[in-house]
Image 1 (cartoon, helix red, strand yellow):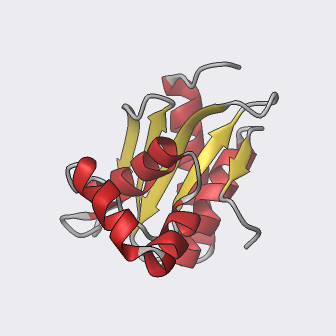
Image 2 (cartoon, rainbow, N blue to C red):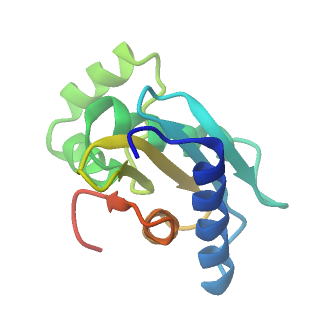
Length: 146
């Protein structure tokens, strides 16, 4: 698979949502983007707060834009705040440096998109994202083991 289609993106989002329900997570919002950073699928659970779609998209978009999971971007923000601030300025504020944005890789290891989740703690968001990607038979790349 070299591209991410709507069917696969929807499957990833639904499996991530199912993991969230199993974990009794707060209402989640799940965004799946293609490798160009374009939104394919957005799932917003009942009760999710108003900015959750933008946060989920920002986590996924940052992962695709910088080529690494948003957990690593968050670490960069702590270690190099001026750099991440400048990058976020270049990105028109669309970068969300918090765990929950995970690259989606195909069987060859190529980045075909990213998933971003917002709603619970960042660790739970990331866990649900990884679960959704792996349930689709793809590789979740958060950058570090959780």
